[in-house]
Length: 332
Image (cartoon, rainbow, N blue to C red; front, side, top):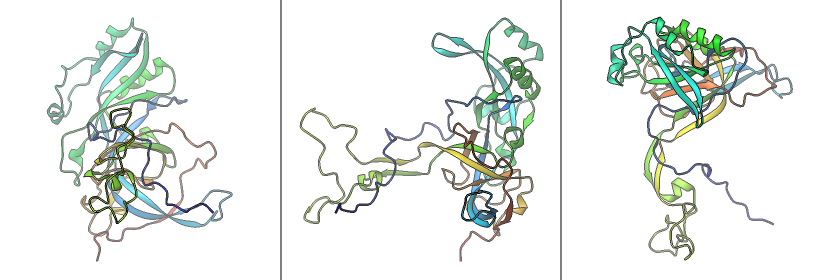
């Protein structure tokens, strides 16, 4: 009979496990979508977690038609402002920036983040008429000054892709939203699936047992019970990267696929717990409830993207929520 053993703790598929370069996640790919042009991403701030009762609409589920309790994460998603339109063209090494057109009357706090280019006029787009545009994206920034739970008020600037329709339709859509505010409903409706990208909680420098889940050495080892057994073979004459050793734990960028948005709300008072969310306070802007957990601590910026691997057989409507807990999270 084979010996029982516990599963390995943590994923072995990420390496090297070093700190993320920035607390603002970076997206390297966007899915192709059909339909009218729209922005394919958004950003918000994590407020905390609670639980809700949702009617199970899965036809083959044992709880079909019944109320089931599910944990939800509350993200505060105030409107984002479009600062610029960025055009891409093809090159021998892939997409290359063809040019940018910036909006007027940008947030003065944005200059603390970067050197804002000079103002442009709508006629600036004419200089790119002869270029074969391959992709259209926009530069958008958050407005943390609208939040009460986030002390950092400097905006976060990020790139969002415009998807759907033809290139001409995407460019016309980008021109229309330049310098304006976009909301979470411009990105996705209730009940849709999105990919959540965030930087996880940082746990600092930890040993090999916590970092890789290796077992403790025998009690007869009088020096180090939580150390690795050995550093590998004599040849080659270096320590391979597969050897579990101590190092950084947490503060890594991670992507969670197919997280469902079960509610989009405008009134934060309806989901604020008594005493506010721990280490955050009260939600006062537009918010969304995401099914399950989301990487990172409270107050951290969370990026959303159209689902790369969206499930095909799923109810397309918005989930029916019967109750959202507003009990205090402060403890006894």
